[in-house]
Image: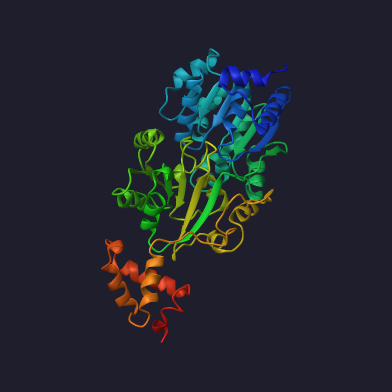
Length: 442
């Protein structure tokens, strides 16, 4: 059967014009309705309109579509979007009304199931669904099948067993990033046959990448986000404790909130709603928000702690600019930073190209903006003031007396002497003070 996907997109999803990659993916999925054991990996950048790629085929499919998400925030996002479009669906979680959901499925009221791998492996759910016709099983944020399945989400490693029970016509894996290791592991865990891969460029042209050799990270953040045009913003860190501390330290300057996996689901939902509605707040978050709410107007992403992989960084920085506007992503490179990506951001090679190369791909065309291509580092807060003091009185100060002198200045109010001493030592190690502060070397 032939479907007019442009008419369906307009009438059911209020989409006037499909993007080229959306059209390609939707047609490929629909053409697979007449086949068995369909397999596809779709790589679309954050903000690339991937949800429509499986939503539209889901509403025209004969059978049920099961969409598997890694986090509740994404499930809520998807459910809210379908409700706005008056598309019947059910949500299966540990807390949902399973009896009502199953009855909706039996009565053909709901053809789309939104769930997690943990809920899907429930024996009752699995037995029930195995008796139904399953057209599509969709894994959104599919890279987490590997990265989380091999660490704290072991149910993901049962995926192949579950799929044998369900016998779907097609298995689809959607992700914003895909390296060679993730590709091979997805093939091993999800697919019976070799999947077709459709990949748009991972290059987010509207994101400008910056790096800062940070001496005073809090003040760097304050400076970067001072203008209201730079907010709403997200500050990423790897530690739950630091996440909360950052929100407290930044609260005198901005409306702040913090988000991490240690919060109750109710609290996370409350924060998601607050941030979604806000036009000027700063969210301090761990990677738990790296795949967070579909907030399209985020203007700035700052990494207080650098991500552990290129895939994670592209996911997290990709939270910004989903509305297509030009946005900025900053990395604060501190002396104690231990990320494998540290040298990438310190080098003179294009940041954009280096990140995409680490994903096993090549940058098509020229870089649309990064500090490396401009042969610079974004100015760190306090650096110029320290250099200026040493430049004017190079023979008077040692490290301790220079910091004592600066602490009397208005702009360093609230800065601790130890922080200032450390900043001076960093500038010495980077040889920025060597020529103008020579007495420290005598």
